[in-house]
Length: 292
Image (spheres, rainbow, N blue to C red):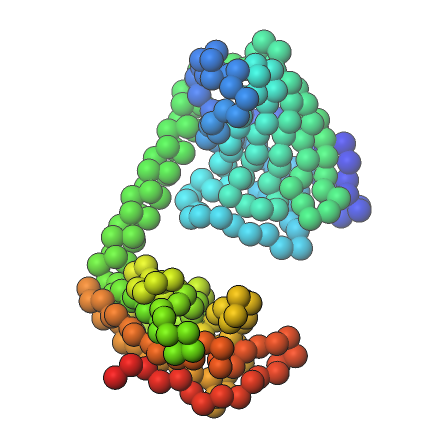
């Protein structure tokens, strides 16, 4: 049941709608119900939200979608039961704004409570009542379709991970600070060249190790410029001018090939690095040079 119409921007066809939400044929076992932080159970719903929102979900100024989008994305739900009698559910959990959040109380085979539109501000609100019904072919079909869709999505994601791992190369960094005469940890931005297969993307926080080699980083094949992102001088954290480079900005170009690892040794004077100071003030120094 829809109780409030936020800011007059809804034109509901009706104030009430009926449907079905399916999690499992049975409630979870009693010990699970009493856990203070139970695991979330996935389900599916068959409720025509367009009765309220003129579409399969409520519109908002913007929304973020998490993970993949299988065929039943707009029919997904998650739910939790707390301490035998408190129930929370989310309809379309993979969307930050546009779905519904429901909170209610469980009494026997009935759950009743309030729902609210997931919105930046002033979303619609209403009440709901759910009655548990015996397992049915329709309910089983709804869950089965959801299970199959989730399985297909997991398999597709697995194949994509395997394909990506097969084509990736790897990079390891080590930085020698000439000012202190030791290996130090420095974070770099990796700026992809425009002619890379994946285009000119920039990623942050590829670090060298505190006492030598840092961890190994995976990269799509291509050429990348390494620019200092963050470093420490005399105990003070500073940010490099990687975002606004000029002729004084040191950079190291590496070529990543599938199945191969690049060990990049870098020699520089950390405290002489140009830094970003908040007002585009760059401290000019001579470019650092890599080890021969």
